[in-house]
Length: 412
Image (cartoon, rainbow, N blue to C red; front, side, top):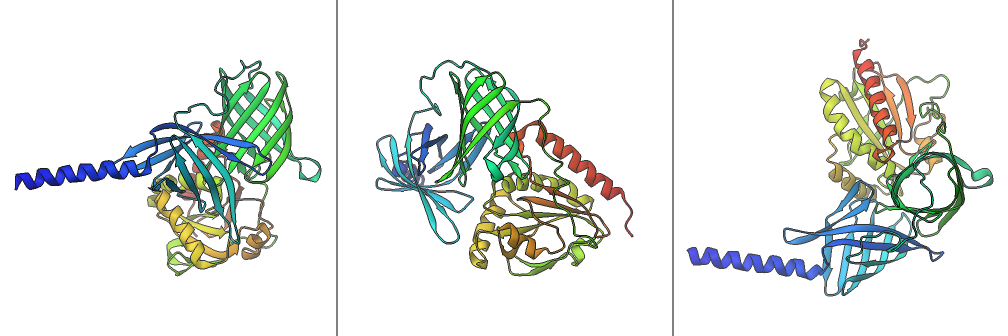
C-alpha cells in the first residue's frame, strides 16, 4: 500500500512538471509590446509564475497586478484568455520570445493587433535611457484632442528618478494605472489591462510645459495633447453632469438578471432601502474599478440597509453573449448583488433610451443614489479609481458619508 502511495506521488509530480513544461514560459518579468496600425509600440510588462500544475501571469501597471489564470499551451502555441473584456492572445513561442496576435472580440467583428514579448526583460521603454532632464511630479492641466473634440483633463504624475507613474482624470473616469519614464526631455507612459492599451508621449519643454503630445489608443486610435503644470487644475463636479428630467423624482426600469428573471426597483428587496444603481459595462475599465470598490462597499453597507443593482450595457443586444461576459465579471469580483442585462448597447443614446427619465448619459460608469423613499438624490458621472490616489480616497470618504446620511433619514 505504501509503495502504491509513493508511486502515485511520483506520477503526480511528474505530470505536474510536464504540465508546466507544456506552456514553456520562462518565469519572471517579460516585456510585451502591441504594435498598432501606425507601427507604434505600446509596451507593458508581465510576470509569469508557476502555480500548482499550471502557469499564470500578472500584467504590471504601476502598483496594479492584473492576474490572468487562463494560460494554456500546445506544442509551440500559447493561448492566453483574458478574464475580462472578451479578449485573448494567440501566440507562437520560439525560445524566450512570443509572437502573434492580441485579439479583441467586438459585437460584430474581431480586432487583431500584432504582439511580441521577450522574457527576462524588466524595462518598459528603454534598457539604457538618457538621464531625465526634468521632473514631472505634480498636477497638470492637460488638453486632449483638437477643435470640437478637445477635452480638458487633469494629469497627476509622480516621478522617482526616471520612473513615472500617474494618470489622467476626465469627466467620465480616469486612464487607470499609467507607468513609464522620462528620458532626456521626453515623457513616455503606457498601460494595458486586457481590453485597453494606451501610450502617451510628449516633449518636456521646461518645468511647466508639455508639448507635441501623442496619445495612441488600441489598434488605430491616435490623438494629440498638451499640458501645463497647474496646482489649481480640476474637473467639473461629477454630480453636476447628469440629472433627472423636469417632473421626475424616481427611476424606473424592469430588466432581466443573468438567470432571465425580471428585476424592478418596485421589488420588495429594494423597499425602504438606500439603493445604488450602477450603469456599467463589462467592456469598461473604469466600471471594473468601480465594481471592485462596490463589492467591498456592499459587504459593509448591505447589513445596514443598502442595496446595489448593476444595469449592464454591453457591446451587443444578444442576451446569451451578454450573459457570458457578465458572468465573467461576476465571478472575477465575486459580485453578490444583481447584475441586469438591459438589452441595450453601450451607445450613450441607446443607454438614454432605456432610462427616459434621465436628461442624458455622459459616460460609463454612471452611479445613481436613491433614498429610502425611492427618490433619486444624486447622480455621479465617472469613477476615479485607485490609480488616481487622493481622488479615489476622497471619493470613498464622500460617498460613504452620503450613504450614512441617507441611512439616518427616516423612512416615510
